[in-house]
Length: 116
Length: 111
Picture 1 (spheres, one colour):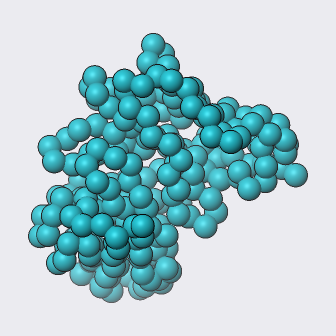
Picture 2 (cartoon, rainbow over the protein chains, first blue to last red; picture 1 turned 90 degrees about the vertical axis):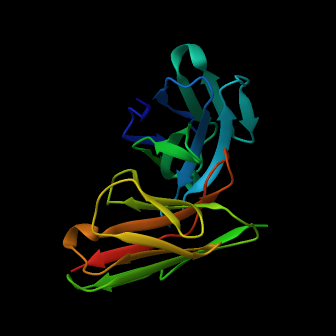
């Protein structure tokens, strides 16, 4: 069965520290997609990144970087030099192909607090 | 560009009253549409998804129903609300095999 685990329920860091959010997934599919979403206090989920199972290249976008390792079924997210605006709940998600739609399985989320 | 709207933003309803939440998408055609519920402090639960007009599938049995009367309109309804229906309701859309984009959500409190 497909599953996404985010073992860190809550993390607190001081501003400017680096922080890594862990994500471990389980799937039997050979083709799948992984995502990260950010949910600020306003509630709306904001899409951050999509990765497909055939592309293990790490990606960097500004202060954000993602490390995808199929060997350990992990898709970790690092924020460098954290800022207060990074405070949010972050969800890792896995997409499987099911009939005619793409079902996305979300992890339980990690609540990040960046303290000024 | 595509945008997704939800209304109302917040709603307080008594137990046993009806419910209608609306979601509309602009800037795309024939999207997949989704309703999720997020209970306080918890993850996302997929309630319904739709791949076309009039095509609704339910992920979990519950007190709610969904309809898609138009290509870019998705409605979540209930005839009689329960206390357990309280939560944050999110609508999302996607194209096939792509990321889902979420609306601003509706915060529902059932008293």
